[in-house]
Image 1: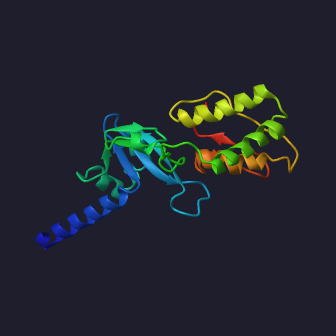
Image 2 (image 1 turned 60 degrees about the horizontal axis):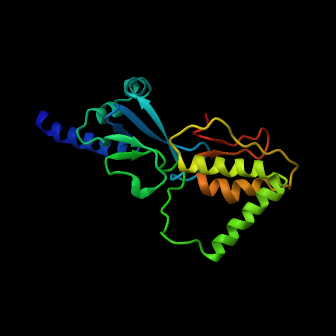
Image 3 (image 1 turned 30 degrees about the vertical axis):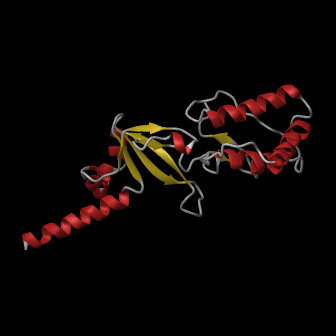
Length: 207
């Protein structure tokens, strides 16, 4: 009877490990644990973000009360990466790195070419809207907003100490900035917006 139970237990442990590898990664160099979590209110499985736990906090939050996590923790087949990365460019992430931006914002896979006429026209339309409507032609405010967007997109692993805040009547085009610029640039999980009630638009790296 004991001999028959051992293979069954091993298969169960292997199944648990394979399943949890989809949601948990151990970062070996810093002894951290990354847990994949669905975005609040997500309706599909690809709307997710990651939470990073220290070893002690991971144990307190999960391992102490969940035997499946303990099985995964002690498995030699658990998902492991050497270090964390925060890079919006797919081809700049090493195989032994775990990219925290996977799922948090659209990863860039940019072709080595000039923008097409259609792309330039679409870009001009949104930039004209920002300059003429959102900042009322104020060149300083226009430059600050574009610099803010560029910094956050190009430095996703660095915190920024300020954020843009648009106030205006309904129909002035605030939502256009969100849907046409910020959501495509930063993704649903990095940008939180409420169109009714108290409005918030905070990037995850803010301050």
